[in-house]
Each structure stands twice: as C-alpha cells, then as structure tokens.
Length: 71
Image (cartoon, rainbow, N blue to C red; front, top):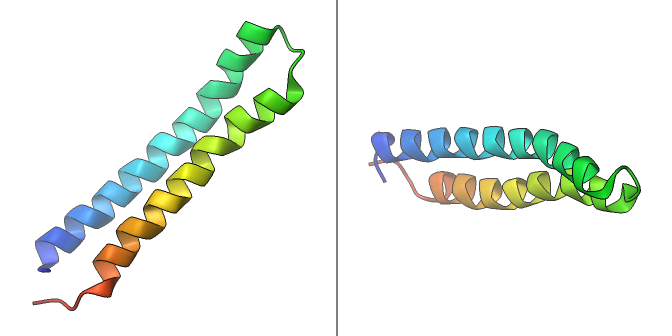
C-alpha cells in the first residue's frame, strides 16, 4: 500500500468519524420530535449507536492502513 492510499484511508476515517458525530447530534433531536420526549432509552441509543458503529469501522480502516508496510 502506497502513501496516497494510506492518506485516502485516513481521510475516509476522519470523514466517517465526523459523519458519526453529526448523526449522534441530529438523531436524538429527531427521536425527541417523534416520541415527544417520552423515550429516554431510545434517545440514548440514538445518541450513542452512530458513535459505536463509527468506532468499529474506524478501527477496521486504521487496521487496514497500519497493517501493511509502505512501498
């Protein structure tokens, strides 16, 4: 894997984490508007689930970038 591909993977990782942070901010607001403030557990899941998924995909991307030597 060359440096350009590693840079692309790192940029994809940053974009993934940024999208997850945005989703974890917006989804609880949508959940509140749908449930009218009654479902605290659902709101908590809407807040944390995008971050947990992003961390899993992020670790896969970083593992792919770090696991191979640079050409």
